[in-house]
Length: 259
Image (tube, rainbow, N blue to C red; front, side, top):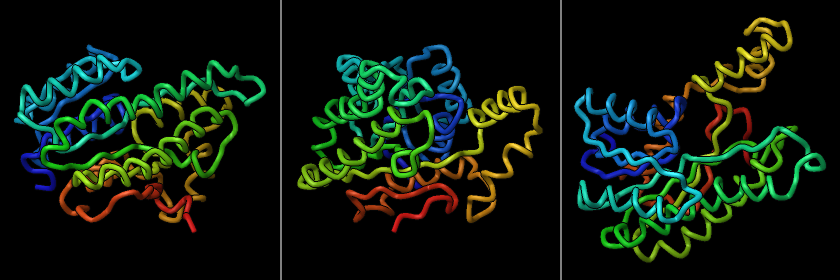
């Protein structure tokens, strides 16, 4: 098992990759502490994990609040005695609008959740993680290196998170804590399917007509399934990545290739 007996905290448990991270993490042997703002959905996913035989605690968490981040970390230690990994998967996208049409306050809100929320969680897990080392994975976005219309605030926050990833890797390496970022592209899963439904209704096109141009940009010819993207994230909290730290890796099927 990839993460057998490791205690992992995963934030941003939603219907996309967050849920897959929880289910696959448990299937690969991890003990989980899950956080999300939606208490009802969080408990639903936790029950799925329990039904599959996994060990899990679920704590409603808004990562824009340091005390709530601390509470999630404390719940993990209380339930399982340690913290081996943190996956910062939570984010706030903000409005789809140009820089000119967006207020600085809206950008600050996105930054506070998407970048500083992850850093709050790092603050929360450090006391436990410094005792035995571990791994932190910051889930980033292809938008940080390949800008798209309407995503300026989100892309900027993710780019800042990648910079923080390198800084943290440098500082925390002395405690045997690895810090990496996974730069995700478009993922085939529930959020994408919901977006496609909206686009088909708005543009009067079929799903295939809308999706085809995106597939053409991807070297592998398909949008990566979110469960396969989740596997890539779990790799970075596993012992197979014990000598990798301070990197941002592209997980997008070959749509964007860093030089």
